[in-house]
Image 1: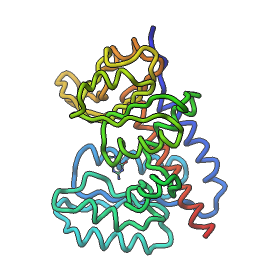
Image 2: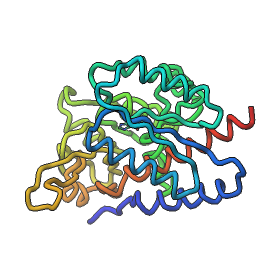
Image 3: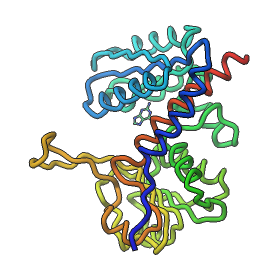
Length: 287
Ligand code: GUN
């Protein structure tokens, strides 16, 4: 039997329509500022999608593109200015940063009330204790797509493959908050296929193309693929294709639900970023 597709493009479109309706009734529009340092091609694409997302729902956006050799002090000074700017609701510094810049110093500099990613160590703490300002975008997108398809997380065994600060760790926190029983595993986990096979909900965020095979998946499991990997393919106009961390064709024969790549969690991430910007705006104007 073939799995039902969790269509992130369609679900994100519904969320954006809801956000647009709310934003249209606001006199002062929420504003997101995105900072990009360097010219990583994938980051440029993501930043472009974030700006477009804001425009489409009537939110304001501002982009700062800095050269790859920008000193850390200059980036921190920009963040200070944005923190102090009363027109700015959310600040996002696109990761990864160039190697000479400390990610920790940058994320810690963003005001916690404007930290639209929930990456500031204090917000990571608030997330762990159950009361974050906003939830991190990609993990929030995973939870939201399951909720909107009435997938039961309570009591389920959720296995998160990947332990990054951006996805794996915060996703585990959000799944716990939904009363799932959570296992985090990674590339060095003993018998990774067996751990994956024990999952009712399998979330792949390890960044390795199609590493999770069909026979790693329990029959009827929900498979959420967060991976976005570029794989060379000279026959395509761009010279590459995008694949997830899950071998989709095999997995969709076993799973009950599956997210495609592209068109799964990617669009959900953008929708949650817009939702977070709106939330931060509402929190700020109510202070
Ligand atoms: N790079 C990859 N994903 C993200 C994200 O969610 N936020 C930021 N700031 N950078 C990223």
